[in-house]
Amino acid sequence: MNKNVSLWLLCAAACLFPNKQTLAGTHHVVFIIAEDEYKASESLPAFSAKHLTEAAGFKTTFLSQDPNNKYKIQGLDKLATADLAVLYVRRRSLPEQGMKQLRQYLDRGKPLLALRTSSHAWDTRGKGPKNNVEWTSFDPEVLGGNYHGHHGNTIQSTIEIVPGMSAHPILQSVDAASMIGKGSLYKVSPLAASAQVLLLGTIPNQPTEPILWTNHYGDSRVVYTSLGHVGDFAQDGFNQLLKNTILFLVGN
Image: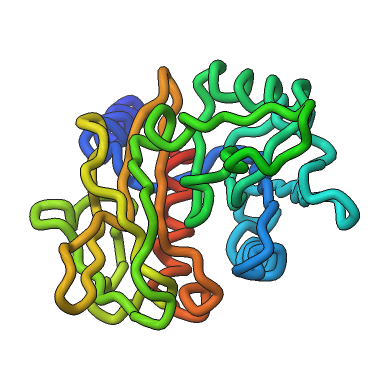
């Protein structure tokens, strides 16, 4: 085949199939972990070691709360070189410089993946240090969410794909019917008009709730999921979902 024809076919394929999840070069993923309930400081590094390897085109950095001060997260300057920030934070605040670095990251149009308690990441309900900065509107403003409590901790959720969304890149090879939401179902409805819901969670005798959706904050592409319980990480479907989401946010 003529070399020019082959090149044309490759370019055409790239245009026709834009959702193919591929990576070029190394993508720096910065994890920000500050919570005391769900062992995210164990589950996320374990997930990363398996799925976000250097051979797969990733560099990872983990930023965790100071063991002596849960409102202190060192190293947020690493966001300056991040291609993706992954947030698993619950009711924290930051020194002014730290919050400025987070906002600057998003203002540059960089993507964000937020898990579970990150819907109330930066709202301490007045319990944080006096000189720290909160971002109480982070959930509706950035995530497109509306967290206002949760159902019982021992009630597991059935999970289903929103009709018409099964072809979305985040849901590729994900068998939602085989997954169970192990953590409490969050009350989040109604979402912002800009949110595109992909997964729904249901428990007996209660309204169905969105459990994974996409949103935009300025030029930043955002994905939020209320999944992220340690029991979720034990399921192949959730790990595939998380991997797909990261590829979606950095690879296309």
